[in-house]
Image (cartoon, rainbow, N blue to C red; front, top):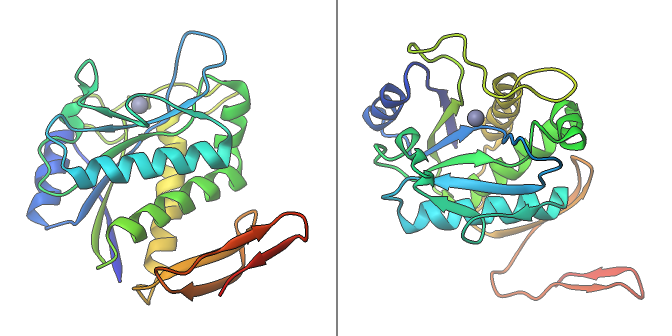
Length: 228
Ligand SMILES: [Zn+2]
């Protein structure tokens, strides 16, 4: 079972409160922005003191986003340890639990801004985040969510980058996290087994548990997915 709590206030306060609550994982959602045209990469920031779990979790998320949205992964195989020249480090490094800061898509890229604004895009982003949490924290527990930029005492009007075509980074970051929170709370049975899903858009058509060492074979010629 997962519980979810949104942390607000200045970043350091969010981190300290998540520690106090003994959260098992911490996620801060952002969208990237750039002055150059058509940036197209996904990246996850970890604290400079990040654990191996934080790093592996961040890479798994960045790669999954890259596959789903046809982006490249930036940084060190999808992660930037310690942030952009230190920026982002303070958003994470005081947590006692694994923590990642997500920059999956660009608010400044017109095609990606449309995806961020779409219900479908938000559901896809939320699902990948939820799957990453299920994979790296299968024991369940309290998940700490933080909306980047919004709810800071130091700068209450900050909403991050503007999306090309309308809306703000923080506004859509919050929508994605809220969708992820609903999905996480719906997981009543933590699967201790490896799960495979057949999906159409965000709809799960088929789901089953398989053995850890089972081989799955996609025969593209026959159009058959062979599971044991
Ligand atoms: Zn941001």
